[in-house]
Image (cartoon, rainbow, N blue to C red; front, side, top):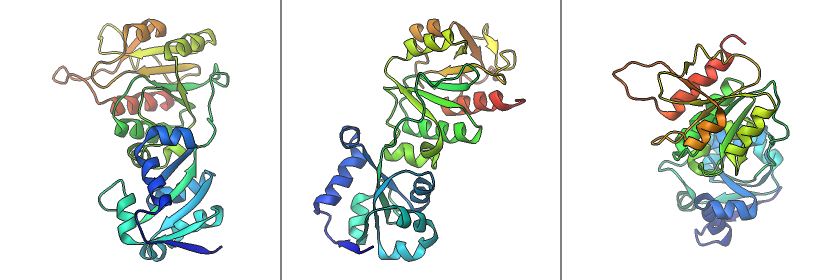
Length: 267
């Protein structure tokens, strides 16, 4: 494969990458996204994500050669870029000089494929990309059967989510729903027990709820306002994590990780 070279940040291909990194609309219209860092590029390649092109500096090609090898074998184009171009593309201050233009894969989870025996985590209206990424990472680590997000959560393929997820985006089954209350109701019809995470101490504790069983889903709400009344009513049950009275609440991603662990604690 011939290695091309780009030395100007005004090159149309570089401008396209910048738009894809910064704009959800561009990603949605094109079906493409950008991965930054040698490790994440390797993870994408090993997970079978379609790689259109690999962009790297000469220094990165030498320093991260083992990480780049899977992407080089899988991609259709390799482009040498200069350090200034890499800095133009970078979403973080200290870039490694490695980027990949990737195709957004088809959803690995659908409403129809949700199993009555599955164990699911649902996120409603979260706002922090870092939280979404952290939950993705935990969901993959604890073997969650599916992560379900409302469509107003941060885009899975934004740089901040990709970075925080540490490759979880590429392997964790995810469903993004436009009608989360409706989906919750259909899950209940399938026999999946859905529980809304709440700060209500009259709710079941995470221990009492026995989350380590088949056919269960926990729903976590917005970092500031929690779950809407509509979402709580759709779930039908509430659950809370017992914490010290000196603390008001847990970070959404921390709470999610605890629930995910509870789902796999004994099962």
